Image 1 (cartoon, rainbow, N blue to C red):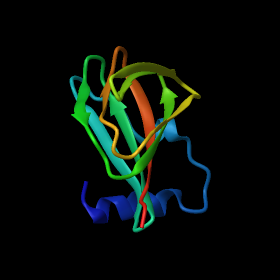
Image 2 (cartoon, one colour; image 1 turned 60 degrees about the horizontal axis):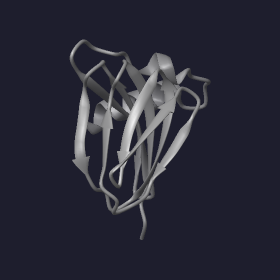
Image 3 (tube, rainbow, N blue to C red; image 1 turned 180 degrees about the vertical axis):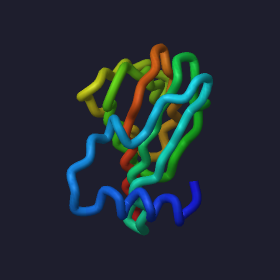
Image 4 (cartoon, rainbow, N blue to C red; image 1 turned 180 degrees about the horizontal axis):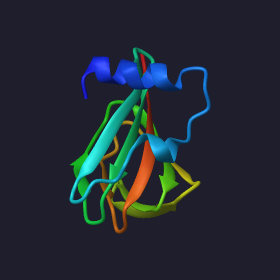
Length: 116
């Protein structure tokens, strides 16, 4: 998603209530992402995973908070499998390898906190 699209989404929800579940839709055999906010201090990105989709193991130089909005996610952090359901959060520490799997369709909000 380009910066112009992200700014359009931000304008649509700025200073108004919005249901996170409605801002991103699950697409067959895909992972969909929408950037809600991208600033030097951090970013907010919505994701929708179809069943069976995954993000392979990687690391990030920043702490990240995953908030499950709908469904159930399987996170692997530092080799340990964690299952998180709608309404739950998980912090993925900076520098620790992590992966994301979708045993069922799910939606999440990823909040990245950038360190100086």
